[in-house]
Length: 233
Image (cartoon, rainbow, N blue to C red; front, side, top):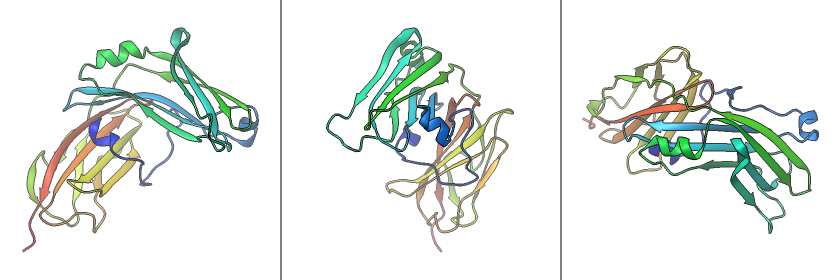
């Protein structure tokens, strides 16, 4: 999703790690050679009609010198190495291009179990598995503001939406057009509103916002639109 891919992380607004997307490792798990976090999921943009796949992996305390991911039928889809780094890489997020035909993504990355194999800079082996589903959640629908609505208040603005039942989370992205300012929040699946923190919005500025429904398997469907705040009087 083009809006979401420009950002680097979620702010902590009612944020809890989704247990179905990742598992935290205890010290015993790390000693047993398990990753601290693994996930693989699909993401689509309802407006642009594009889709992508994302892989996320967090190793142990030592960085990864190598990471391999095998799709169902043992086909290697990721094979990374850091041969000249003493620290390695501890956390990686890898995403595909975004073709407008999500069938291309599904064909290249079939549903099923993806096996992660890592080697740390100290030679320890890490292994884990994550499941990929091809089923997308139903998208949310904007209630307020309406797409491309103008002259909205720059203070105490609350976004509202409707969403299907049974989703795991709602992902919110708000960005100021032409600047680096952004807000990202991961809310519980029951959330239907989000009040923009005071001081973020400016008078007479254009903004883009997106709402994503996140399924229990991690797949997500985004809708996005723009709005403009009223000029200062």
